[in-house]
Image (tube, rainbow, N blue to C red; front, side, top):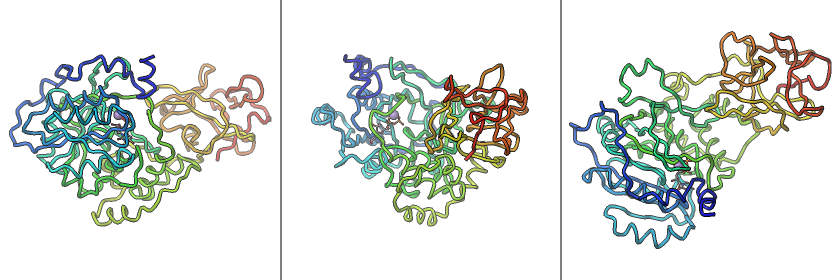
Length: 468
Ligand code: UDP
Ligand code: MN
């Protein structure tokens, strides 16, 4: 019962979290090559933690881990921002608890603002040179702060993120990342983790490494630089896109971003939100695309099909970009994120559907190697139903290709010259013919098996496809 309540309210195992001490000890996860003594004098930092209906134990374990593992002279204060929480334990009880903790202050928004405006509000209470943001279910480990501050001391335009380790949402075990990963995104503007190409390392795995984007929950930034680039777009609601807004404008407006492997902070990753985001997320993404992505916004619009939402007025944000004389999105892609594929070899794109409104629908999660393809009613919103038919005769879903081998139809990583991934869309018959087997893609949805299969080519409705 208790266990289920925790999962329901927080989407993690609160029951287990409550059994673990608020100041539990954690190993030192730093690479042995990480410096422990810093020659230059480091600036002071304030830590902002916004929360909406966070569990008691995770919130306070975050706070205690900061207090316990931050050198006193480097910490200005910890600012907790309660963003419209309704749970009773976050009312007077929280106020009383933190009232006796030195350096911890609690402010409350007057109504639910979403994490973006809650963070901006927190920032107004900062008077140290550096601001650090943490989620309300984190744990800082030994030596987490100094290497972050050192980068900002070196250059106040560097925005830094620690290595974000996993705290298991079920067991609350702290699992340190074995390999440093950097950030990126696809044309759906969702953040992804990426392995670092070997040549970028050369035995320097412990040194700060530049990243095109950060996950956005945990990072340090100079207050002056944050102010200069206009904090966040304060019309962003609840959650989402603020990480890329910060990433794009940091790079485009004269700064840079790094992951700092010597700084380890744990975060409880969960599979879904315990709160509703509604259509606000889409609004944020549209504002982001409109203001920062120039002509490249069209790739995002392709991806979302007919999904639209009123995104309000963005003129002030455009003026900000103008005033700061920021570089173009093209510059950013070329110089900072050349790995992002720009699909110039696309013959046709959109949904692949039959004449009855049934679409090829894929389920590939970012970390999966394989994806499956199923027939589902077309929804018109891109995403899982967004396909690209390319000049080299492949049917692509992001970086995955439709692959038919050994009687199985799957999505696999696109490989050069993989004959099993070649298809020809025949304009006359509207067949999608698999080159190697000379068979055709077939929609068995209304016949027998409710599957997408590959079969001998016939002139029949189940083998007629439209790409649009
Ligand atoms: N949060 C908030 N207001 C909101 C939504 C979220 O203050 O309207 C807080 C939340 O409590 C957490 C942080 O913002 O501390 C990030 O949210 P979450 O952990 O749900 O996002 P994720 O880590 O999954 O990206
Ligand atoms: Mn979180």
